[in-house]
Image (cartoon, rainbow, N blue to C red; front, side, top):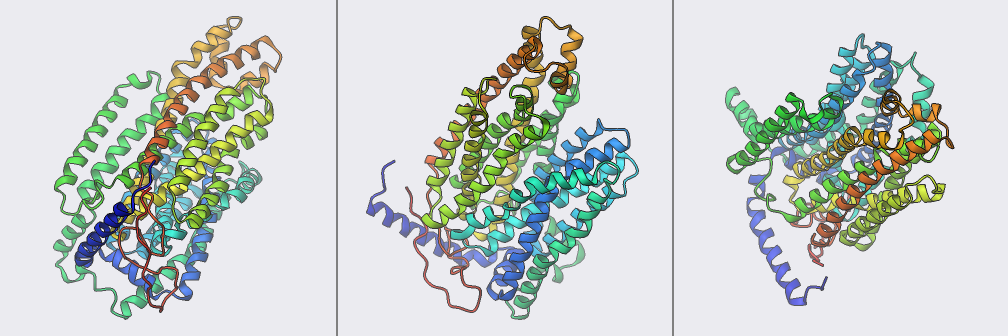
Length: 590
């Protein structure tokens, strides 16, 4: 792409300056009390900043360990109640609630404050662990999982919001990357913990987390609360407007401030879309199941209703300030396509490595996780690349290209004759591309909006990217259910329909019953290769839009401010008490 001329750059800077001046006049009136408290708290932070960083690090480690072990406690629990089939339904509900629960927590953080929203999230997190730990039946596990999911997603979004509050745009990518660093350690530790506790003592798993979670979160909640209290004492935070209102008026104002109708429509709408995407493959009639169709139709209508409501809402979730912001929507669209592509190629990789490559269960687990490990490592590298170059666009585009190359190599080397290097290297490449993308996309979305909007924009970005993952899961389920049995019939004519059905229902049957070298195993490998080929072709097609969209994203110049479109919290690299310095031009559009 051609470089903008000096005249274009000057005109763009003048336009940004005029917009910044215009917005600053109305800034205080537009900002909700939680955002004002966050800015005031940041301005008085001293030792509390480092206590907060310690708290974020501790929570990041525990959160990562939790995400790598919760499946084990749920599996052990449902198995101990002789109801393992319920595990799939429980895990689906958990995944859906984690996706849609971010908006309510983000809005509460804006309306009341970061410390309050963080504490509420940890409360739900701990309560969910406790209920699961003392569960006496599957119903208890399901109820605990619902509450746990709200806490888990709340902690995730609050970590990202607090980082955006306290870390400048220049350091934002590095900070987001470092928060995921515990995965490198938990990659090994989590499996060891789960296996050591085992089926008999599974209650110690969630019990352990119910004790450690409040301890880990104490530092960050304390730091946020102390900062807010200090700022309040200095008169930097006004009294909450609800305090001076009659009770019913305060309740009405609260519902308006959080955009309660909008929250209901978007959360329930996505809930009704995501549940069928994950549950359709479990139904005998698949997508033809009546309630699956009904949920999809009602969910779609609710999301249409949400879009209409947001036009007239007094304080919409999709604020008018960023509703047409291309950087937010392009970054989110890239995230959607990337997650769609990732899940389409990654979900079946575990069984592919068992059946086609002949790995044992441990080797297959390491194979399926090596992409996630590479994603974490290269995500951190992407954050520091953005720090060094002070922009993110070309790291983003490079990541999209590398991801595409990795999927292409996976298509080429999907056959049984591939070496270990040929099988693993494409996974590492995809992880590298995904790491570059994941960090820079969130930075691109956050720095292109004002501070008031960062919480809801982050929630919007994470929700839509996870929606892409759900679509990828649904695609795998649909192809597996509708296509794979036909390939088994084509390549395994020597087996009966009952034997082929047993292989389809439990792929481990193929490993234990038909070793590599037998005609049956060769037929199973051919069927799985053709099945994977369909998914990988879809994945590589979905990997193209991120490259195109990445080329038209603005390349904003990262600086020492909270965002790149206003002068809010300029000079964030200082802890407190020092005068702010003029910052660099906010946009370098390449």
